[in-house]
Image (cartoon, rainbow, N blue to C red):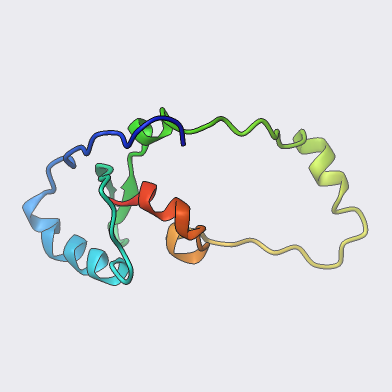
Length: 111
């Protein structure tokens, strides 16, 4: 991150009917959480599914040092699977809970 801590931002309004479900999910996520920065959240809900809390980190991203490493083109990635006997897919609907961040990076993902 470059510069100082970006300003905190308020989240978008949450529909009253979704308050309870959102609060339950936030309680599940709160384990070790403290940050002086707050990203706004956006909610997405597909019919018949749980509400998905998404982080709007556009403001925090403005302060990040760009990562110059680029992913290889898709055709090159697929060539690496030649001869593989098993391929796995993951549902990362709660990616930030499933893939741990370094402690120093966690403060930038608060909401």
